[in-house]
Length: 522
Image 1 (cartoon, rainbow, N blue to C red):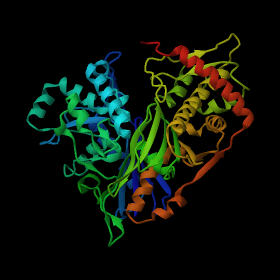
Image 2 (image 1 turned 180 degrees about the vertical axis):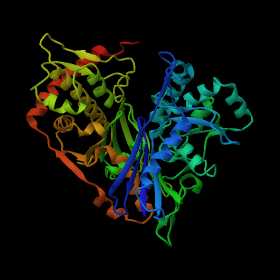
Image 3 (image 1 turned 30 degrees about the vertical axis):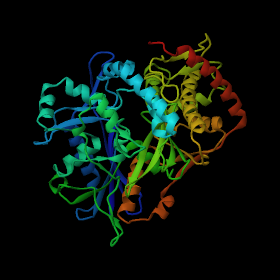
Image 4 (image 1 turned 90 degrees about the horizontal axis):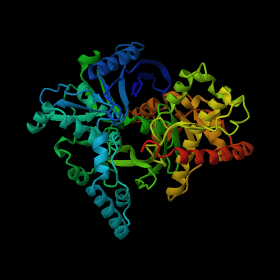
């Protein structure tokens, strides 16, 4: 049994082929073409669905060509989160483009809601209920606010701006979903219309404390509840007779000319957490790619945060969820691309050696706030920039300051995790994502934390490998006990106490700079 793992990300669609021993034996990928339009403050970020589906078929066919036509194959999907699309329930025709997570059409609606008396009342009620009951789900209600990256206001705004969608909604012919729902629908030719739980959990519509959609809040804001799809596990049900799990869907044979089942679906960051082998309570995964995502395994309990850690379903098996608490920072890889574009370096691969070529930044710090600063600062109005520039500042020092700012953001998120979770963290900290190939960043994170950091082999493929590992378990190619044998560590970075002292001094300077740049755009 071969496994085709398809990772549909923000910038690429990648199909990876794994053999029955979970060895990567081939891959095929294409760049995603993003369409950006609109005015500042309400920028629209969209994908053409037909183009996405065509690229999906091409990359899958590219990996299928590496094996015999009669070789058994199963598919595992990991999907970018919170990008939505609407379709006609009767004809199955798409009626919108994919509206990406960073689309800004709902910014004004979110701002109005966040200033509203109703939301302030909800915050107050949450505060009172938490005081009376001490139930964690009410802790989140104390700080509830809306952002466009979540699904509900983007969908409601899209419907409000389209007479066609309003008509379909009135006639009960409108459906919507994220990437996982749409792919299942397209690949099964309309036979499967559901939403996977890890993908649903990051939408803002899902209440992890009751493991279902939050009908109360959705009803208050006027969301059409009839649009909510059924929720499913990340894998199918177990057949005790065979030891295998049922498929989530069967792909229509006309699409690829052969029988392929879909065994697993996970959201991309949750897939990376699973692929990093961070399965125990207190294990931490750091992913440095398009954005920075730091997640800690909280096992069977969702974490309620006051600092912006988001509780998500890591994976759901047998109706039982494993939860993660996740902190994030937007725009990570693009910082290096920007540094290259303005002439600070010729190749992003040189950034580590450039940073190591100087002893320090000589007091220079960088605020990496192209999209604000998220967890735990949560300031969308902060400005990006260098502070502490001098006449003798060099490119090497500027590059080092950029890389240090990335490590400071990781450090901040992990400090928020340590401050909030009421259990002991393990010693397992694993790092993945394309930017984690940078030795300077990995070593600096280890130095700041004073703990070893393990970089996974094939660091850019960990999410893809994560769903492949879960698919192999679903197909009884290996057992849960054998999963640790499939994890490969390429490098372990050990902390240096001298470097830690210097970095923490720079970190204190950086914190002052953050305060100076905060609320710049307000």
